[in-house]
Image (tube, rainbow, N blue to C red; front, side, top):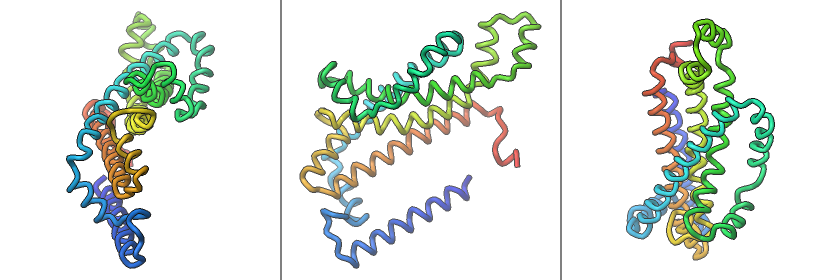
Length: 252
């Protein structure tokens, strides 16, 4: 694990060094492609200009992610327990992801206004699908022999679900959570483009309209950092909850 992280750090640092040298030697204008040092300087010196934007995006992301996780889990459980409902609604579940969010977003603004509701709906739409699909697959992959043994022992459907199927689906659930954690930040930024007073999306829009490319890169930098932080939190929770699972290194 450490070696993989170490290699990734070397690649990232190498790219930044090449970027910095190329910007200096080729005299690329800052408004086209600022050097990494210029971006970092902007990030540190003007922190007071955008710290409230970051806090707003974090709050919006966490709220939408929580709603998306709840909706995804409820849909997955419903479709698993009711096979006939799954046959009817699963195609609609897939079709819901074929509609581009950037196209659906203006409709949500028309229907619900410029408040927080359409923004939460956008984040929920991009978050619930990976969780629902991953959880459904995890529930379906439960060992049928174990289900047969529990039925022979007199277990009810509720006991089979809560004590066997649901715990068996937790690894797949975390796979969906990892994807949704990164999607939630993207959804929050897209929702802020529609019409918000603050947020990283608003800061990025204002920076691009004024040709402050360095500030656009600062916004991109913080978006990447938020995605990595949320992803790391999910991975940490997965390791704490799934201690019983053998590690990849032990399987080799």
